Each structure stands twice: as structure tokens, then as C-alpha cells.
Image (cartoon, rainbow, N blue to C red):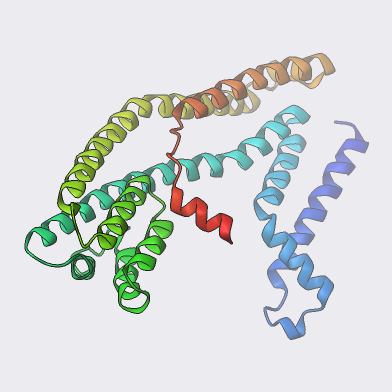
Length: 285
């Protein structure tokens, strides 16, 4: 690495370190913090992931003397949290779908016992397990039924839950309330059948896509392990990639790997059905 490039890397690393330390040791009381310093702290907090990715990328450039490797490391650090968050979101959506199915089953059971629809919604709120992702929304639904009325409460419930089965259930329940509960039992039976089928399908799709997600992480892990091994164990072999031609070849290899990971990420994703109530609430502000 040339002295000029080494100085540039050292300067950038010093700047990132200075920004991070400034944000870390700035007092939390807003009165004692000047406006410029407070804005700097907010900027660092907002872009913390990007700053960490840039810092690690610069360290990788300094260690390997290859800009392409540093860029690849920085991009990987930037995208990995997004990939992990996507997996958590899919799990949360599956758990919510199963919770909505259970909520419908409980509502149908309480109605069959002779309770009115408004009273059934309040009773079902007490039946939700503490670990259920639907428990907070169901409890708020019961409170809103008493304060705002069942129709407004149900619409708020659908927007909060953000699930297509819950949207359909709210549509059915609102229609039943306007028609004095006429046909609500048959409609709930149809919804339960749909929800049960949807839960099975989502589980089956998730199981089939599990291998795709595993392959995605295998590609990332294999490339990272090979790069670390050859960089540490055989510097002479990696020295060829420090040239301009070597950097171009390495960039092509990493681009192919990135394309494979991107394609696997797209294949592993599942499109969500559009939620009517959530969309309408967002449009209405």
C-alpha cells in the first residue's frame, strides 16, 4: 500500500473514531449540550450501522491492501442485519397468523355458548395467552369496544394487527353487527377454514424455503472463510490480487457471489397479502 493511501486510511479511521467517541461521551442532558454537538450525536446514532461498516471496511483495506475486499466487507456488514431482520419478520408474521386463527376459534366458541358479539370480543381478550402476539391488540380491542363502540374498535384492531385474515374477520364482524349478528356463525366457520388452510400453506412454504435460506448463508460463510484463510495463511497467493488486474478479477468474483446471495434472498421471500384496513389508515394519516 502506498504511503498516500495509508495516510488516507489512517485519517478516515481517526475521523470515524473521533465521531464515535464524541457521541459516546456527550452528556445526555439537552440543556448542557450545544446544538451542533447534539446534532452530531443524533447523526452518529442515526447512521451508527453505516459508520461501523465504513470503519471495518477501512480496517480491512488497511489489513489486506485491497480496496475491493474492504468494500465487500462493508457491504456485507451493512446487509447482514437486514437479512436477519427479514427472517425475524417472517417468523413474527407466521406467529401472528397462527394467533389470529386461534382468536377466531375462541370467538366462534364463545359465540356458540350464547354470548353476544360485543360481549364475546371482550371475553376472548381474557383468553389470550401472555406469549401471544395478539394479546395486547385483543386487550385494547376490548377496551375500545366499551369506549368507542364495537365498529370503530374492530377497525382499529385490524389496522393494528396488520394481517389479511384479521382484515377479513373484521369485515365479517362489522357486517354482522349492522345486521344484528345474522349469519355470523357461518361466516366465522368459513374464515376458520380459510385461516387453517393459510396456516398450513405458510408452514409448508416456509419449510420448503428453509433450504434456500441455508444455501444463502452457506455461500456467505464459505466466501468469508476462504477469504480469511487465504489472506492469513498464504499471503503470496493473495498478493496477485493487489494489482489493478487482480482487483478487477476479485471484484468480478465477489459480484457473482453477491448476485447469488441476492437471488437466493429474493427466492426465500414471501409476498404478503395487502391489508385493507392498515392501508386505509396509513392513507388517512
